[in-house]
Image (cartoon, rainbow, N blue to C red):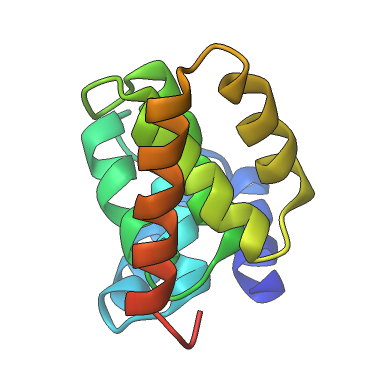
Length: 142
């Protein structure tokens, strides 16, 4: 995925024209299933870099990358659910995505999961854990 971050940085240095060109090629790759490009589009839409800022579109691209096992996209979805950015705010879903990110090796996902759990009921935590387990079972290669 590093080449996509490098490509994004290249677009940053070229100004708006560079961003537009970077987003064109990133979208083509993302539509073909490239997980790095999908994350990059999610990030770009989240931050309005090279595209018009659109949290719902960010969630779409993060979700596609997350379903392929990308821990950073899984973490990003947790953050979107926690804050209600592009989705209806949902602490249970945020916990679920942070937990999935943690199971994919993201230590920040684990830390965030543990922090938000302090403000959740035991029933909410149990529901989030079940949703995470079910997701992981349905995506065994992740």
